[in-house]
Amino acid sequence: MNELTLTEVFQQPIVPVSFGVSMTLLGGFFFACIYSGLAQTEKQISWLLTFASSFVCTLISVPCFFTFWQSGWDIRMLGIESTWHTASVCFFISYLILDLSLGSIYYRRRITFLTGWFHHTLYIMFLLWFLRVRTASFFCTAAILEVPTLILAAGSLNKGYRCDFLFAATFFFLRLVLHAWMISELKLHHRVESLWIVAVVVYPLHLYWFYGIINQQIRNHPKAVQQLTNLLDSKHAVLDKIFTA
Picture 1 (cartoon, rainbow, N blue to C red):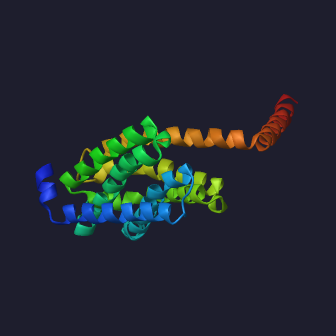
Picture 2 (cartoon, helix red, strand yellow; picture 1 turned 90 degrees about the vertical axis):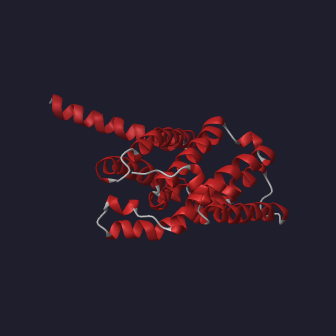
Picture 3 (spheres, rainbow, N blue to C red; picture 1 turned 90 degrees about the horizontal axis):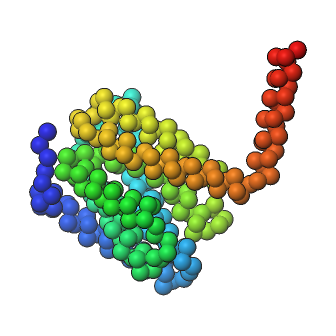
């Protein structure tokens, strides 16, 4: 398989155009929300770009994922390339760059090393490689994993939209179950033989975040956890009596 050089990637007309349009639209949305008063607190401001990106990525992924499902989960479908696939990858890279650059100015305290600088830099490197090996269509289908992010971002911007259970459920099924399944399928069937390694590298981040989700829910709902513990203890006591009778 012949890889493109980075120079060849940026020589494609769609690439600089997509970066320019994406930066302009995302930046415009960010500052419009700030100056209109829609986002006032540092927390709200920090979630603006993430909300916009996850919303667009979800829209992008729905038709791709539907086609993937219609194909009988044929992983080879994720190797087909088109101009709009390339534009979508450029959009997400633009988001990552803006989140770090604008975040360093407007919400520096909320950009951590792991979830900010490390995560975003790693994803930029992976996505540029996707463009080089011409597998941007894989990103467009896998962007369905942004659904939990959209739910979390919406709840962070407006408490009325917060739903911890929906966020945790979608995160578990998409970022843990679906992602794990895709690792094996990519290894067996995708034309880019090393693509599955990228999925493996990213997976521990999802596990770490899900561990954080569980711990947060335990802290937020101690009574429910205690009730569940008491229920399990009572069931164990009953089973012990049955098997020791």
